[in-house]
Image (cartoon, rainbow over all chains, first blue to last red; front, side, top):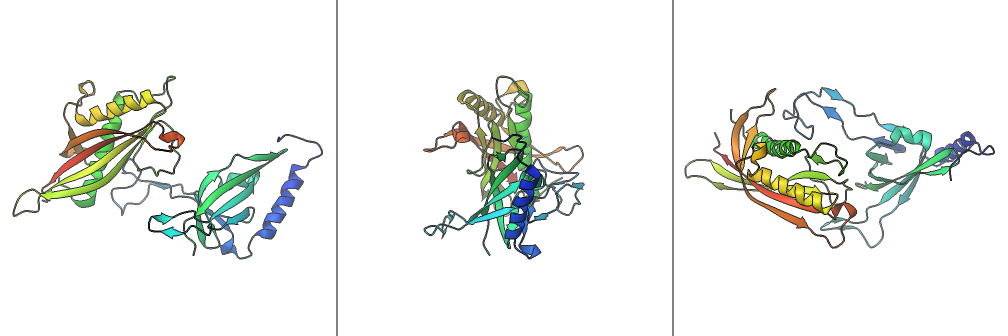
Length: 149
Length: 171
């Protein structure tokens, strides 16, 4: 159970985990985990779903967060099972990734919709219940591949 | 003013959404109540795999077909099949909401001003939208969706089907 323990330094723990995350992160900037958000725009005249009737209109506001590129995340890739694949009905069991991220870094990306990893887009599907190590909380995010280029 | 093509379709869809939403608003469904969870309504088809918090009403515009109205012109009668999915928190709410949506569409709810199965289509591009034409609402039916292995939010799932009939004269 999470809680405060005088013998445990959450700051040292986070530093050590982040060091390991950076060690496992690819060197090229474009290959690092890039969290992205769906566009969030408002228009002066829009339908109930918020989309404009005039596609040439300029958004009255655009609150889409900028992409967040980070190496403070551990990425575990899960390949497509051998027996599955692309069928006439679609793709079953797409490849996925499990992202592990610390509490302080999680705040920056927790509302993201998808993550770009090495040129492939993964849609974020599920946030597991967080686990704790005394004062530090660890978050796990599951995402599945849209396409694998 | 006459509108054509995709804009016409969107105004029909949005007018239908607002017709049902306004009717349910008049009936108090969107007010918080200690007797039930909050009710919300969305204008999109929700994928089967996506978790839905009850009670949610989702409008899904599906297939269209058309037939010529007369010889010598491009006038057509367009039939558009639209579904309202209700993911309710329990049996009573599901039956109640499905009945209310059906009555609103069918024009059988005089208490809130619905006395005929007609859809006034508004031009929502205007600051004060006005009715620019009407459609008929036909073949309204209610289905209880029963799945062999339902997800928790699919236990109390109703579908109200309506066919929107638009006489598009093409001019």
